Length: 407
Figure: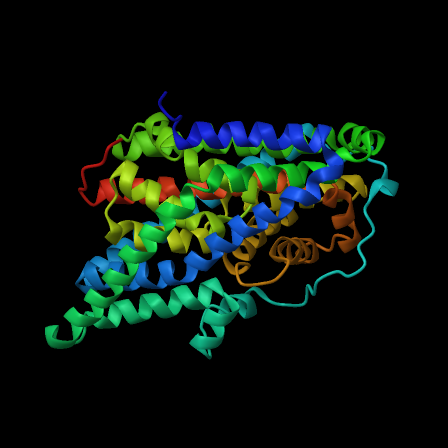
């Protein structure tokens, strides 16, 4: 009997994890370590994979003109799709008005709110490392990407005598890291099963509390999910088809493994090794394009998160009975976009983003407690959309550069 494909194995693992959490709740401790082990293995691969892929990819782009063109296309794609996602969220939250009539006593108490006094400029400055070795040790993604791109770019400025051995070394490291990634991928169903069981068990303990949360925040959840679904199944596929004639449904099928993994882990960065493998081996995107667009996308392209932040901010305003003017709503759109770009290397990034957005229009920071109860569930969906946006960018840019893809 033929073994089912990896995406079917992951889907079965997702279902099995939910059932385990519901019916074998007391035994979660027996399997939760498996999910932690899987995430640790993915995190082990991330930084050496990113550094080697960016340096070899950017070093292989060649001229400054090629680099500039690729950079402009990538940043433009990420900005345009993020703005479309935020505007969609804005339209939906104003249409459904999920915050009107919400019981403010349902707000989760927050013991410590993250600082909201950082400017966008300060956050963006974090992308330039003052000590690259410290950034590598701390896993700070934006500074690592900035350094790797700079290093890769300047390898093109030296003579072939020095350039070839440097690129040869990083190409070799990249190939080895991809072999390790392929092995880790085989453990994905097991890891997804354990992670899903652990997440669902947090909600499965108290059925009455669960019913109360979902009945009160149901419209808010529906609004966020509707926005994420429309963006990922209509907006992004339309962009792929209209701009470079890519078959979006074939692309989605090719990306099933990283998308399902992103859903269960809620981490774009942890999913990055699997995303790179699928984009290169299934879509046929070259390493030159994937190594430039995907690590950058996993860090700054937050379509799903930006949409969520916009909906959540206006939901909090509605819940507190605060009328937001058109100008204030435009400020939310711009702030959500900029905060999404700069939030990558910050602990509690989602909360920090939310405090920045709320403070920009004078909304109460305590309102974050209203959305925390369902944040983990929505995080799974928005991370999936974030990763899907990255893969769409890689495919669209590769096709626009004249590459022959399998979609």
